[in-house]
Length: 133
Image 1 (cartoon, rainbow, N blue to C red):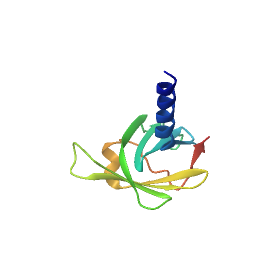
Image 2 (cartoon, one colour):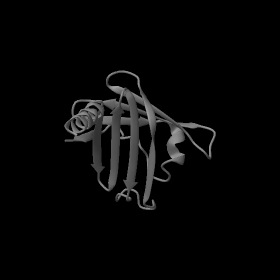
Image 3 (cartoon, helix red, strand yellow):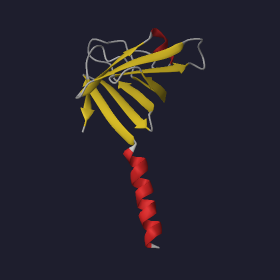
């Protein structure tokens, strides 16, 4: 019985040793960006979501939200590239995520509009999402 419990604990500890999840958040006025990066056994999964309420400069805009997730590729130790094919359009949404010790910046291709409509976008506009500790 003790051996089974010990083996179960070691197995759980060994799998969690290879898994790490980091969360990043940016609140820019009424715009909120959230990014989750999970590394599991050398595989990178990302989930990005945005919730935008119009700022005072966006008078005729409507509130919107968007989400995208899936497996990504590590281009370098500090850069992640994520591509997702749109089910309704012919293009791909591509996110380029640049990580720093304290945060992340996101750039997006023009074809990401199908995942984040209206004023919503995944691009952080050169601003850094802060790493949640």
